Length: 147
Ligand code: CMP
Image (cartoon, rainbow, N blue to C red; front, side, top):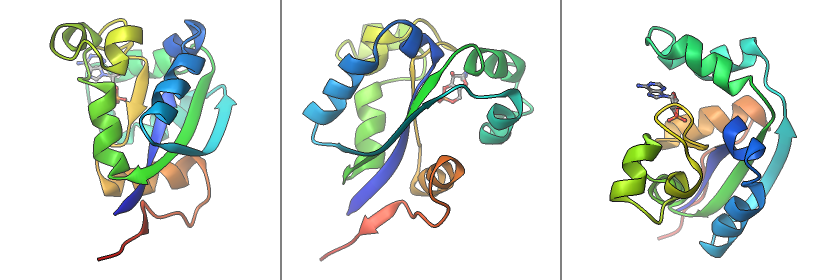
């Protein structure tokens, strides 16, 4: 199944000049980048995007971090894009990624559990919601299906 997923290069990734190397990694792993924009997120946008984490202890820190500088938001497309992008970025905690998934994106550009450099949608439902959150409202996570 050809899918779309949402990728975000977070402020630490943009600030650390990792945008080009991350995009090379994406393209070298057979994804196409069908949409892309750089923007500065505001507090309300981050609170709404991460609404499912509103009750977590790390939420205020997450909002502060995600508004600390520009982000690059991309729609990635390929067969199995959602799971494959999650596999490519590695575990949430960049310090764990460096040990267990040394070739992952978070291992080479992430800093710690919060400043983990990149985001990836975790399910088809999340991908559909997150893509329409930032891009075209009618988008579906599943692009085409053939058997
Ligand atoms: P992501 O998976 O993109 O979405 C939720 C984000 O919250 C996560 O990346 C981290 O940036 C951050 N996060 C998740 N868990 C924690 C935690 N325990 N402490 C601090 N930040 C976290």
